Length: 182
Ligand SMILES: Cc1cc2nc3c(=O)[nH]c(=O)nc-3n(C[C@H](O)[C@H](O)[C@H](O)COP(=O)(O)OP(=O)(O)OC[C@H]3O[C@@H](n4cnc5c(N)ncnc54)[C@H](O)[C@@H]3O)c2cc1C
Image (cartoon, rainbow, N blue to C red):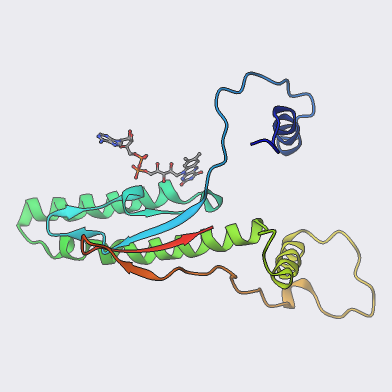
């Protein structure tokens, strides 16, 4: 945190909140939050069911953790209700499968977004240029294009994600964890 004195933090907040007159207050706690991606799959074993952050973590960049947690609980609640009402457990059996498609979509989006918004100082300069290029494309175009340029931003295909998925390790519990550290 040495590179981030309090004044720098307040200046950043003023800038990002567009509140130039924001008055400083007491900072009770500060720290750098490491961002990571984790998926535990399957999300169930026997009568154990994992939901929310216990099963998967997404980097904060995508703002999807709570949404995923709520979706897990919705699916699990429906499956439990069906089991209590009818004794049928097929929905419970497919709980993990039902959740994981959305989980991996959110993991992919969040990892991609994190890679887009963060620069690794030791990273590949070519990838950094691609990142800048993509950011430029996403911004509203203010400048008039020169008349000899026929292409429009809509005709440029989007870049693929540069995120790298970690290997899947076997965990002693029988549940596998795939981790992406960002
Ligand atoms: C700074 C920040 C910003 C975020 N912003 C967003 C956002 O914009 N959008 C979004 O979708 N997600 C966001 N998230 C992620 C979201 O908060 C989490 O993904 C979500 O809260 C996970 O819900 P959960 O129920 O799985 O876990 P939690 O909300 O962590 O709930 C777990 C609960 O279990 C309790 N607990 C822990 N251990 C025990 C124990 N041994 N006994 C009893 N109780 C225990 C804890 O006290 C806690 O209340 C953000 C997270 C952070 C940290």
